[in-house]
Length: 227
Image (cartoon, rainbow, N blue to C red; front, side, top):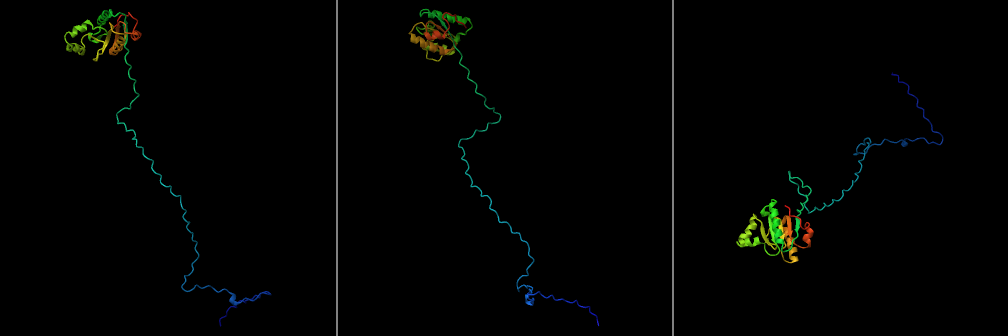
């Protein structure tokens, strides 16, 4: 016969006084899964996704600023320089005024002397205009004897000294104007001086008394006529 090893003795511990003996029903029976249920798996750690946090709400769209109806500056074409500072307009030339003292009876003679000095100094005859306040100059009467058409043609041609009345209404402007105050009223002489000054481009020679304005604007009486 085979020899079996001795089984170890099992010592049963007795409970102490007041402790009931354990019963077989008190032992926990292993849990068996119910029919049809899934076998529980090992617990897994599931990380819940964070709830979405609402972001900043977009601001409402602002209306576009109104466009100005005024058009902007147009681009300057290439090659055209920018305008610089405006240059001052040239001042009007100063008219020299010479006053030759004379009575009404002497005015024509003094005017003829002034014209001769002007021509001798190199002035062209077509650059001289003689205006009379009183009676017409003898040369004016002579030219009118050939007819007014021929007379006014000399003014347009501008080749010779032209004699006319101080109340001349036709356009006439020359370098030198000789005003002859040989009669008329003081008011007419003063108006003739203003008119003659506007017709002179460089020099105005006043022969006679044309009023205080002419004396104040002119040189001392008796000064020789210069070119």
